[in-house]
Length: 240
Length: 240
DNA sequence: ATTACATATATTGTATACATATAGCAAGTT
DNA sequence: AACTTGCTATATGTATACAATATATGTAAT
Image 1 (cartoon, each protein chain N blue to C red):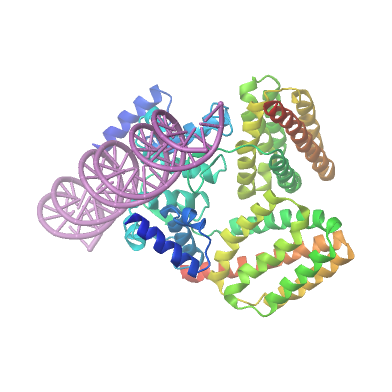
Image 2 (cartoon, each protein chain N blue to C red):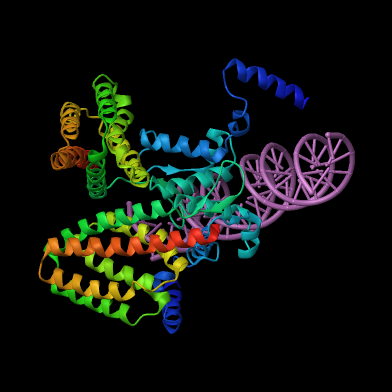
């Protein structure tokens, strides 16, 4: 009987092109869905910096009770996307230019370390994959940029075999860059980025660790400085 | 009756030399207390790796309902101190040697960056303070070591003026090192540490950035390797 | 008009109640 | 004896109810 169900599931899910392992994780808790939804709204700007979050509003929007909403808010506070004061309402974190700049410094620091570790053990396959991902970026939409760009960077670091560091980098990237990116909405750095990606791949291919190290550092920090300047300009405009 | 209580509070708190404005912020949420308590128990080993956490047990222990306990668990999951599976009970995270080693690498990476930024702007006062904190370590108890050691390191990095990086370092230090430290319970690295601290201060005083950089890197990584080896030994013993 | 205060309303924090899922255990079967 | 099968007990996930706090409104005094 169990086999029978599995067989049915197999056929059914394949017709929907859903992998079978998704069965087990299908019924996800409300807190996970709510967390992801709020996070998405903060990152895409629907919930702007400083916005006050009402537990009841969120609960009714997502058709759940306040209990899972409160848990979601604690998770998001841990991600520094919102702040929960000791008394009062939760608010979307206000982005501070100096904090963002430090986070770019951190990214540069960790990612240069990773590429330095990766290059000596990089295979032809790794290089080829990075090239494909760099190509993808050249023809992607503005919405795809954030994800595709991360995928390219991650591919370069993967040979370093430092899962924990990579997770750190991923969090830094998504929690802050992604939000800024939608905030400033500028694509003026895209051509520079694309060029530097190809230069990076070449340096990796040649095994030039130092060259790749400095190329990557400037790649990240130039992007950081540009974004931070645009952010400052935005903040000043709001103040006037 | 309410006024009577306030009056009592007034007299009582003044006898303790507590400012009256603290009354308002005094009543901290249950979730904060519970979070800190569970965190403490995990860090000091009372809740060992792999232990299953019952919401009800924790709730009754701290005399609160399960609602704030659940929020606390989400916070602790964000700190990677516990894991909340999609189904089943929350468990205390099992320490993985390779993960710990990566976190030491991260600490070395960030802290060397910080000391490099700090040295050029270090004042005589900063040096003097570091010396005092290094002295404190020499006569402290085993329980004080974790905190005092962090204070010393933080003092060296403070002139760098990188609050976000420092926060990262602090989290890495407390969330992992502190737990390991109580786990292995060995003080065999203490004499080496004390010596290296004084050497570090001298290098900072001389403005020798490169020297301090490498001294600090080996200081952190030697401690890391030693702890990881002891951790591995412990894990093997448990398996036998 | 504006400040100050008091009351009313709304929202948060916590506890309880209910629904669902997991885990343990005993009985039966191979 | 080992392995299912099904039941019961327990724990979790969510919703609701209640309590405490903060915000908003309105009124009176300056």
